[in-house]
Image (cartoon, rainbow, N blue to C red; front, side, top):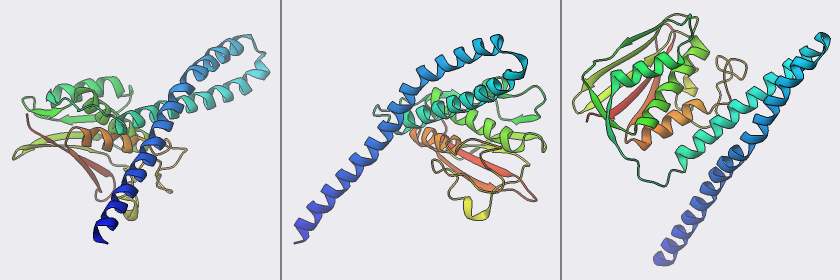
Length: 238
């Protein structure tokens, strides 16, 4: 009986795994197929905007904003699905943290943003360079969306034993205490401070978690006092 129960559990786990994988693959395939028609719609709307009467352009611009939002959602879905469905073994290479942070900040920082970086220049971590870049970029964008005008965003790093700890901190509203353990779940959005109007659909931090864990690292967060959020990434030192 114990043997039959064990076999049944293994079969059930395999079926559940197959269903979850199928769901994620469906998301990725759908997002990929949506990119082409969305691109064509954006081109058509640009042409329509130049040929419309001034009184009609407000409607065209509203539609352009909706299509752009769909485009961002599609890109996020594709990134998340690719991170979750990566069947290949991730190749971990030495990544210079300071150099990677500088590249991300230069690319993601708006002209009026206040971002402070305090990262040693001589520390390398074991990571996939593309996934490391993706995780940092999503954290910087997340901080800018929710706290970009509330004060400086700080990216700091330091060695702790055999690990490198990187923190991205802001002085925004933070999140509710009961949301701390859930904000890395896909599509989870905290109702009050972090909503659709001020941010996306809840995929940014899920992508961060997938990217970091694929590199063998960990990610966590905590509320700062008196306000703000700190996200903590831990990677093995190369």
